[in-house]
Structures are given as C-alpha cells and as structure tokens.
Amino acid sequence: MAPRLKLRDIAFFERPVQFARPFRFGAITINATPQLFVRVEIEVEGRGTAVGASAELLVPKWFDKRPELSPAQTVDGLRRSLQIARGLYLARTGFQTAFDLHASCIGAQIATCAKKNIPALAAAYGSAEIDKAILDALLRGVESNFFDGMAGNIAGIDARLSPDLNDADIARFLVLANRHRSERVAIRHTVGLDDKVEGDGGVADPKENAGARYFKLKLGGDPEADAIRLIRIGRELATLPFDYKVTLDGNEQYADLTALATLVSRLERDNALGPIFRKLIYIEQPMPRDVTRQSPLGDTLRRRGFIIDEADDSYDAWPTAHKLGYSGISSKSCKGVYKSIVNFTRIAKLDEEGAECFVTGEDLTCQPGLALQQDLALGALLCLEHAERNGHHYVDGFGETPAAEAQAFAAAHPDLYADAGQGIRLSIHDGDLLTGSLNTVGFATSVHPDWSALRPLEQPTSLQEYLA
Image 1 (cartoon, rainbow, N blue to C red):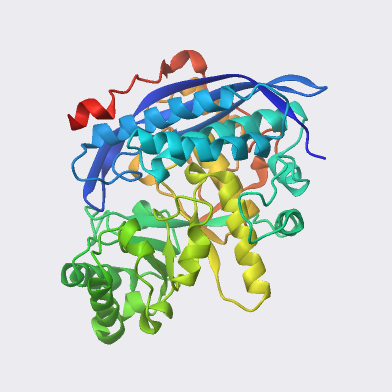
Image 2 (cartoon, rainbow, N blue to C red):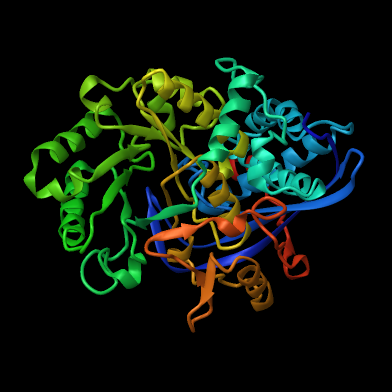
C-alpha cells in the first residue's frame, strides 16, 4: 500500500538563466528566461518530515502561444498557475497518497486557471512542478530511489483519471518498465531555426552536436522554406561518419492539414530531401493544438508517424489523438510525471494488442541539476532509447548557478557531469547519457539547490491588467 503524506509547505524560487546562443522555435526566440525551483515539506505518515525539490525553466510562448500576449506575460501566466496550484494543494490537509493529492487537485487547477484565462497546458505546469517536488520528498522520507519506488507504485497511481485503464494495468506496467529501464539514453540534438547549419559550429560539427546520433530539427511552418533548410541540413548530416536518425518539430506552426500535406509530399518526392526523409522517425506537433483536435489525419499522413506535444494538455489528450491517427505522444516532466506514466501504460497496452505506438522524450531546455535529472529518470523509467537534450546546448553549463552548487551535483553524479577545463558541463558518452547515478534516494538527485542563493518567485501581474 502506498505511503500517505501530509503537505506542510510549498515555496517557489527562481534564478535567471542567460542563454549562450539564441534559441528560436516556432515564432519565438529565447535569449534568457528564469528557472523555477520548488521546495516542499511533507510529513510522511509514521516516518516524520522530509523536504523535496524540483526545477524547470519558465519558458515563454510555449505553454501559451496566444499572439496578443508578450513572452513576459506568458511567463507570468506560469507563475500564476503555480500560485493557484499551491493554494489548492495546501488546502488538502489530511494524510493521502501523492497521487490522491494530484488527482484531487488537477481538475480544480485546470478549471480555476481557465477562469483566469490561463490555458490547460500552462495550468498543468503548476501541478506538475509541485508533484515532482512532493515525489522527491516522499522518496526521501521512505529512503527509496525513484526506480524502486515507482516499481512499487509509491505514489499510489491509479486509473481514476484514465477510465480506459484499470488500476492493475498501471501497477503491472510500472513493474515491467522498471525491469527494462534504460541504463543509457542517447541525446537528441536540437537544431533551432537560428542555429548554424554548415561548417564550424554547424549541425555536423562534433564540438557542437556532442557526438549525437539523433537530431531534432525545428520547422517554421512554411513548407517551401522548411524544405530548403532541411535540404541544407541533410547535406551536412550525410557527412557524419556514423548512422543517424532525425525528428521534425513543428511547434504548432503549420496552419492546417493542407500545409502539412504539402511538406510531407515534398519530403516523399524530392530526392534532395532523401538524407532527411530516409532517416525520419516522426514529426512532432505540426499544427496548433486546437486545430489538431479537429483534424483527423488522412491515410497518407497517418503512415508518416506523428506525435502530439503541446496538444497533450489533459489526461484524455492521447486517446483523442490516437483516434485522430497520431502514433505517439511526448513525455515531458513539466507536463506531469503521472500523466507520462499513464500514457506509457496506455501505449504499452495498445502495443501488446498489435498497435505500433510510442512515447518520446522531449526537452523544454531542461537545465543541468534537478530539472535534467528528474526528466532523464522519467525517460529511463519509460524505457526511452533517446531523448531531446538541449539544455547543455543553449546554456553554458550550469549557467549562473553558484560554483559550489554545480560542484556538489558533479560530485554526487559523476557519470552525468564533468569539468574539462571550461567549468562543469553535461558529460556525454559516445552520444549517450548514463543513468546509473540517478539510482539514489530521492527523485533522481542526491543534491538540492542552494536555497539561500535563489530569489523568491516574482509576483505576476494579473492577466486582466494585460488584456485591459
């Protein structure tokens, strides 16, 4: 039986993160944004108190892409989501399992945020970050690591939010996942829309791509312009001395099925795109989330392998997308650890029945330390072979993290970080990340941030003031 806990406190902090190079995806270019840190204190029934932590960038214009809002306003929307979630979680005063707490709050979180004009994907961010910190505290309180804890369903995940499953499905697949979890996860190197393509610093430069065998190529939404750019990238990737695979990410930029079909037709028919098309695994979230839900993929598009990402804003998103012809769904811990596990269970069950569906690992610039380790551990549990990892690419190591904090992470997780003379950075082994040191008490980390070096989360301006 899953242990029960009682929440004592939730605190939010942030730290500025300056990017080493511009990151352009969709219609936004990021040069800097804050990183969120969550600290929770819980009481584990019969075991005393424990402290847990989580972290994630407050990424502008991804959770909420409405054109009338500035990037700063969408970051404020995430701050408001966190504050709303804090109030809902702390209002639950009795002992309950971690998943009880999540399940009892997520509906009210989505509904309350909707009244504040915050979309569901941004609403889920507040719950997701608190859930990660609670899980870290719970694992510490019972002195378990993430993998063993999840195999035993320490959070008490059940099927109440996924009526297409039953409780036994989730428990069984958690055990099976842990048995086959990934000891190595290959990095998938992101090529942003402003990233250099050719020559030194280009996509085939090992100093730039860190020896990656997988590449995630951003799309801009114009089939002709995207095709021309993909031809250039394909020429460079074809020079690599080893095999490679690619994924394409539309970030909701393709307006409709007609534009998407134009791109797919060009990929299939243009020989110059062969180095991309022959290596293509899937295409990620090409159309806006609302258009996605209203647009069944035809037979021609279905066979190409599409996944949803931004459209994954609820527990019923994957069943809906599957009926529309999508083959997979992304896992991101910023969208919810429990939802990722439920979707993995759904897809594993479908595959047992003969379907060919999959979960992918995507990265919203997870920074070294808490964010990267917790998301990587989730991907390892879901048996992912490769996952997008772009935090090391767009940010200089640990960025503005105090040196002592970065050194503490490197000492505790020496298979993940190393100092090659330019400061502590992610350690990539022949294109892979090793997951061995994540097998430690807590949610994939032996270290918490230096709380005294963080500033409190900024108070957001109300969205009503923005839209007035």
